[in-house]
Image (cartoon, rainbow, N blue to C red):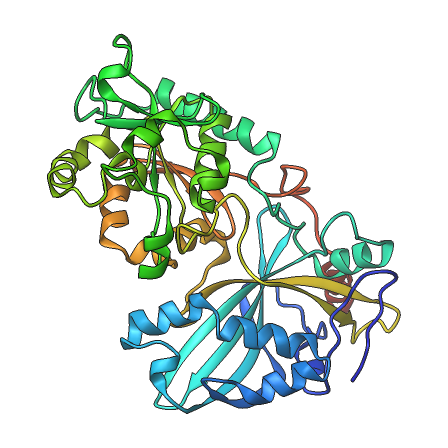
Length: 435
């Protein structure tokens, strides 16, 4: 078992097999291209016993691989494509190969990807795509910065969507949309039967008749997945029996993770009211459910903004931070022996083939998730005139045919437009000399 060190960084320990998964910088392509590594591993589903045994001996990357292969994202994709999840496939051999993808961006930075190709017995192949980027700020060293410059790694994305700069950006984009875009309102002056007043402490449910009339009532609507039957059953709801309690207030300890995040972001956007189906529809009441079904086009069509929790898979999972298991991978240059360090790898998407274009991560944030497969959330997405999508990689505002992606880099920028990496400059100089 090899232990790689880069100053005080906690770098993954690798077994002999996983050392072959490191990026080889002998050839650094100027355009998007998949680079095959020498890594090839064979195991068996559903338990992946070999990876489990190697992880038990200390290999962090074997543990990382096993975690993401058995993740809910992979299981959801298999269920969507094959009609059965990992457990339903029975005992099957799976081959694991690893590729790297590097793309020259207009800003001069390469968005790096690690592609983990799974070849499942029976002729099925899926891809697990991971973002490769500079080691996280705060623990970065001079050495890791040098590695980032050598490989032209993108700065790390923010892991949280609740920073002041994120909220400023969202408020500015919403204001710009309201001032400059024409969105027809389905029903002017419409107010849902019940709303959650988040300006109260604690938040409490209010009825339409108790909301002051006047200018158009501004509210946010939440679009999310309830999750499994067990998750749905355990989430906080409003029933005829608990209505009086909800009108009195809802303590934070009673809130599920999805509701807690929705209240937080609604307050941050200075929106007083929030509509969430579990609380605003009387669960168990057929009459109330039917009424709200008839009003659904007005509820989402009249919302000031719809909060799309695309990265969340259930009511017990929040959405205000990036998703994906992360590992710090060791790097040793094959061209310059003195260049060593690490880069971060974070699992993002389960795909059916090599179709990912890192320039359109927002599309995948909205499409490659459990939220995208649900009929209710599909309807909510179509009805909403303006929506904020909280994805696994990015956060963006969408209205009509207009999408605006927020930079998730710590400095809010994308680098010097004329910048090239050190390795690219060396290669360019070599080409000049050869000519």
